Length: 285
Image 1 (tube, rainbow, N blue to C red):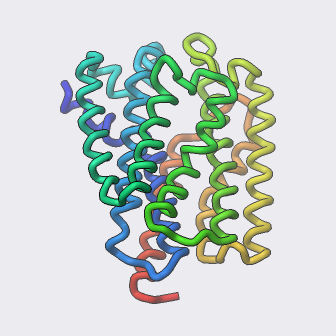
Image 2: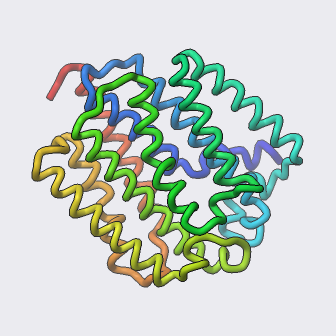
């Protein structure tokens, strides 16, 4: 039974931790020289985000089990863990991560401790910040796409630039809009099972904020490109995800975007990331 549902545990939320990998690789690319041996840092951060979403699925299992579609994708709905089993499973992985990040010294301990604390504060009771309106959005703005970028910068001891500030602002808005989109998608279920910003303030409010943040994101990214703050090397990433942004303006307030669209764009982004990384490794422009 466990083996049958194992792909759900491994591949669920691949779009989310796949983005983490891309963000970490972007840090390496825009702070040359590109070094192959440093790819392990984005990879381990992507694993950390896989862990974070696994923890979230564990605590969401009672809620996801009430919805056929969400329940199918949650490993812990099909393979229930006792509290002790979950503590041993996640605890062992966390100890391993702490030991690994400790090789970076104090800054590594700070990064991994902040990340693990955020994972439990967001998903687990008694805090469960994902069920506290406003805090749920703030956590996404800080930790979903912004934190892996900052973590790479800190671990590698890189000097902060104007480009880093521009990209961080893009990641903050992208994280916020993605969470609003997800809450709108799950609005009907969350009304019955949970509490968050959208169930508290209403789907129309979240839909308005989604369009506002998405529009701001498009304008801001365009400005950064025109002002040559963001190099044209990164422009294809913006163009790849533009269909998802535009989709938000041409649909009903409660309509969800096709999941296949997000997966297809992620694969395309990973392929382009591979091309850019190889070019950097070979010293090409």
